[in-house]
Amino acid sequence: MPKVALKPEDKLVLSAMRAQGDKKLATPRHTLLYFHAKKRALFGAKKRLAAVAEAAEANGWKAAALDRKHLVVEDEVPVSAAAVAQRTAWAEELASRYGVEFDGWEAQIIQHTAPDPAISDT
Image 1 (cartoon, rainbow, N blue to C red):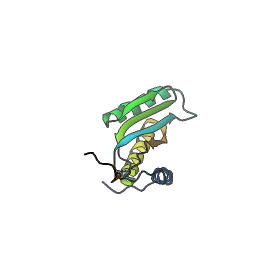
Image 2: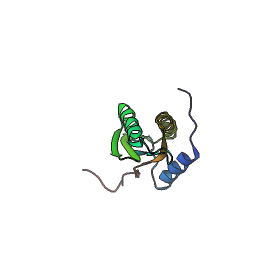
Image 3: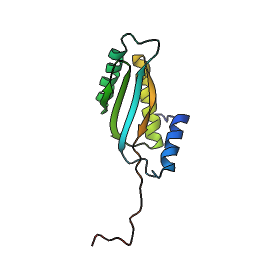
Image 4: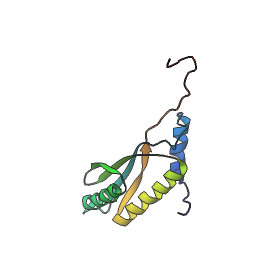
């Protein structure tokens, strides 16, 4: 698969995650993707969003929320730069195919800390 460039908004999210102590972005974590109806194309929007949900579910995502204007899908996935770049490109292509907008993503922050050597399990 060809290399996909990381978008500036994705770089900002990843930078914020690192700044909060999340250093192992390849660790799968709860992640949400947001889609919404285009402002000038509300007629039939729920049907288009439902089609996006179905396509996302075929790729392992689960529809967490769906109404006539919004769709949120969720999964446990890594958020490494490469994974995010590919996922954003996929989400944007999906949104374009069904005439909706991809509005970004968010993910759980996992703070990885080294075990305290003074604390022992034995």
